[in-house]
Length: 480
Image 1 (cartoon, rainbow, N blue to C red):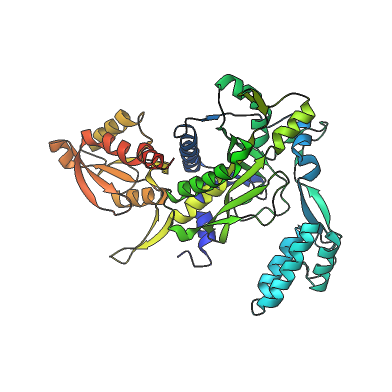
Image 2 (image 1 turned 30 degrees about the vertical axis):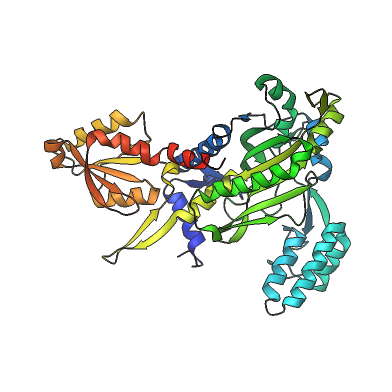
């Protein structure tokens, strides 16, 4: 199904209908590339965050957490280089009034028009790469003109010159106050406080989950590229001479973490070194995932060396160093940076399936990893009479504090099963007439649709063992 052109539209529709993702401010026409998480979306998102957080701070004794503010002193962004260097290239079309990234215009044009001429394609892309490396904006504009690239809307070539565009959101009427474009600087500016209060020794890490904001020129592909997004980042502080050791360690560890999500086999992932490094990095790799629209970055691993701490020490005029073994030094940093919304999209898109049943009917099922499912189990009465509702509700109320459950009686049992399949609920427990006699219920598995009878006393144990984090975290702990 995923090869069909309509899959992405189907995915977006399913996410809205079943309460995962809504367009923000929809009653007013919405906002481009801004989305809200619905009742089931926020549960899934929180489970993803909890899994990542526990993977970092529970499995690693030397990783602690922080939650820094979105608004920070403007000198933070001067020190980090964001005010001077956090730019994308921008070109406007004078007729359509639309903005584009010129390198993407060229890449997409070449991809579409030079399929049968790989030599010419390589020649153009090589020239583009060299011009980007040299920051030769004039040559990039010449390349657009030589290729006769038109605006996709107006089909004309009335372009402006190419210029740099700062991607930070500045707060109007406030001098040099910005919405943060990344969470990492909150870690670096708190480095001294965290070291002193937690008594951490090198090597150690600081994890953070938080919102970031970027004024993307081209925000598109649903949750993949948004202007308001959430990051899960960890900065790992090391001895400078151990840079390569820890860089390779975190590349291997983070890829293994993704593979354990079981979203697909190894062919769904690529580990690629960066062709163009960010201004703060000396080495960088991307973990790419096979989204419905192709392989794209889902997590980045970078060696930031001492770029950030050294600059903050210079701008703040305060020592930001490690003092131990009769010496002091600025540690190097290995960063792991994972886009939460992108991971949500990867999990959702790889889990959503249409299956043809033996009776010829089609069922839609969201085969989420059990430990991430927004609802862990559903409790139903077979019919709404003869006391079955009361028994089902009693089971639900006895267990709702321990597990995220749902109780439903609004439709026939078949339709109730199908709804939970579409939401991704791993187990359904149905109270029927045999329950009155034997204190047993029918347990149905989402993936296999197999049913078996179990005692009411076993329900909570099964939910905990099959849908909790303990099993997956134990598995991950073997290679930490």
